[in-house]
Amino acid sequence: MAFAADADHQPSRSTAVKPGTQFVRYWKGRSHTVEVTQTGFLYAGTEYRSLSEIARAITGTRWSGPRFFGIKGKRNA
Image 1 (cartoon, one colour):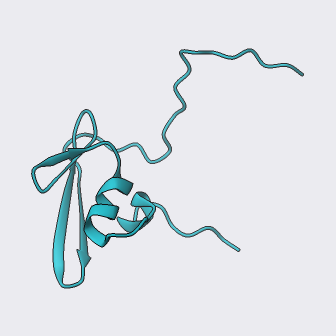
Image 2 (tube, rainbow, N blue to C red):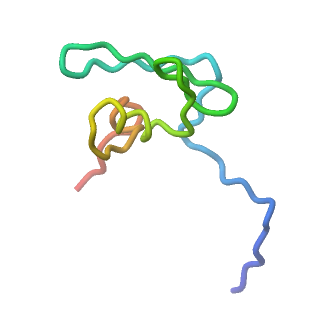
Image 3 (cartoon, rainbow, N blue to C red):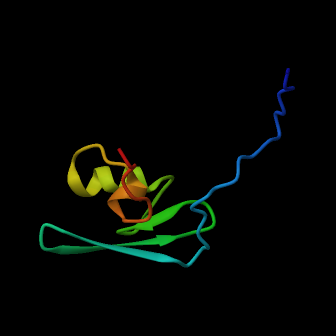
């Protein structure tokens, strides 16, 4: 079966959250608050495109942003 490519297709987000939603994560004794905006995420006065970018800014290492902020669990083995 063949599928035609649709350049305008936007996959649905299973973890879509509304602007104004806040995520709070405690890391190494400090609280980090992220707010969802219309275009991305606001953290410490800076707009980011993804939670993963913010997790990297907080920890200094690569993380899955949704996993770091607790909105996506670990996969079952």
